[in-house]
Image (spheres, rainbow, N blue to C red):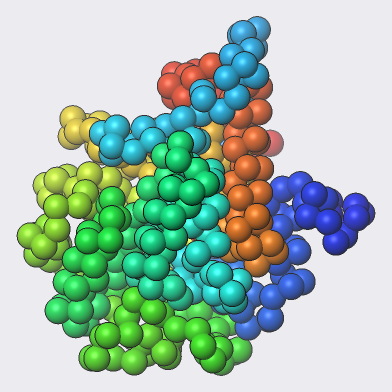
Length: 389
Ligand code: FNR
């Protein structure tokens, strides 16, 4: 049950967890926008299962371990290195790419999100379908580092949808590299858009003044202004990875991998990372939940004797969820909707608060499980899978 209602309702200090932010955002947002953010495809079974699968995994903590270093060194023990130590984040949680942040926060949108990412020393993965153009987000990022957070280890990654127009796709990649994005996250689970019935019922359309700004120079379709016009290339296939890698020297991460066979293929293309994702339950309904898919992916990489970063997203709402993902072998998690709830409730401060809450919960979970370091999470054999009472 959400706890904020019985506390002082107008104060964000009464919002104690992600679900509190969710409920507050639901009250604030227009129904069409709330539904666009919150719902999934078909019967929304994957959307629900993403969260419920975490709840079926039980923790069995280890005790009588000195965890006082967490108090002394604050968040130092949660710092995480990614992409062969080319990135360091303050705790293993990244901002997932989600479209159109200005629907949640009309004035600043992605600019508010990036400020929070810098303040919290984490990575913001900017969507192709952002409502602020990628160069402006990169400028804001630089400005924040320079003026407010010189110690921040935050990074920007760019999430790529391969568009029907290859010249336009090429331009997107080149713009991202030129403006300082540090990795390219290629989304591979959206050859066509899933059946999102709520958006159909609500006749979802972009409010005046909000559009997918990165794509306005794509003359081959009207997606930037009309979100219902399909823009992604249905013909995208494995061989296109060669083409993408010929355009950029940025590390390539594939987002939307569920099947172990696809991991084997990805390894052949020397990608630097994989995000186990089902698009937050917005694409193929009844798809395996991501946390249930993760062990098979990790196993395959081990069997192939390879080492690449594996990330997971979908349904992560608590610090214990992050800990479970790491215990199963993920390097870090990504969070989508919780960021949108924070943004809708209180802009930059709301996103920062959501990240801070998750970090606090994660640290607490580490200590209660007897983990002194991130490595301990994997070594301590903490999980019982698919527990039924
Ligand atoms: C998304 N997601 C997404 N993914 C992507 O690669 N590009 C995008 O533009 C978007 N846009 C988007 C919009 C909205 C409203 C949502 C909810 C999701 C998927 C996103 O990156 C991520 O995979 C999920 O959101 C993770 O699940 P949770 O954390 O929302 O449960």
